[in-house]
Amino acid sequence: SVSAESMKPTDNIDERPIIYKSEEAKKRIDEATTLNLLFKNLDRETKQHVVDAMFEKPVVANELVIKQGEEGDYFYVIEHGLFEIFVHGQLVLEIGDGGSFGELALMYNTPRAATVRAKTNGTLWAVGRETFLRTITNCVYRKRKAYEEFLRSVSFLSTLDRSEITKLADALEPNNYDDGDTIISQGEPGEHFYIIEQGTVSISKINDSGIEQQLPGLNVGSYFGELALINDQPRKATVVARGPVRVAALRRDAFVRLLGPIMDIFRRNAAEYNLQQGRPQESGDNHVSSQV
Ligand code: 1OR
Figure 1 (cartoon, rainbow, N blue to C red):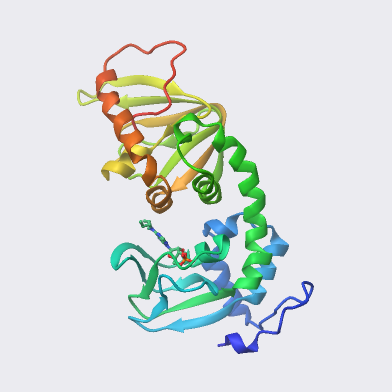
Figure 2: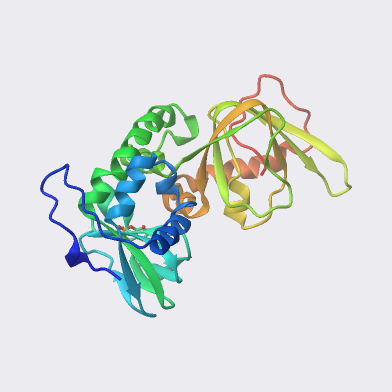
């Protein structure tokens, strides 16, 4: 195992910190990062850069890895172990293998937004602030710029301020679908919220009598998938791509963290779904939300 002290100084931009790793360690990092959102956007070279700079940090149960309010120094990827996130002493989230934390203070240059405590023994891979900013943040920045403009044009987000839009842009994951692909299936558990960037989706639902019912479709700037997250219930309808569709997906934890300020909008619109039930599909409708 290696420690932070073995990192070379990095005053020179071109001088990348490289911490020796066995093939076996590289494999473990690869497994831990493949599904990670922040790594998904990295090109190969940048990812290599980050992996080179990572060092292994073993943790023991109950260890405090991050304390809310402190300055940010490292970003962490979980190889294995369970970690509890506390905001003002309240447990808000538990994350495990392949998850990551500690990016917020580095990305936004703010104090740590939460306390992170190891629930079990585990292994983390740490990335220092400098490397994080030079690599991951760079890629995040490009994606942020691409999303911000789109998000500012989305009507249901119009009450979010600049910094809220920025954070939302950073957390969104682009997903593409072909004509006929199912994006959400009725009855499944919901883990994402979606905003349509391009294309149109159709929505259908099998009602209590087992009859399939078409619901109004949605297009660019509309959202769907919030109900299962708000109500903690399975998906209530099926959403299918009509032609090529591109959506921006937001994971459950980010949805709770970032769209809290507009939860009232979702609730109000959800109440209207019930009124719409059974009404014929309107043409040229201005629906922005779904029943999923
Ligand atoms: P950080 O650098 O601020 C603490 O250090 C880390 O906890 C933070 O980055 C995130 O990576 C992670 N609110 C704030 N931080 C969170 C949250 C969170 N979840 C994970 N972290 N909330 C949880 C949402 C389910 C919002 C609670 C209101």
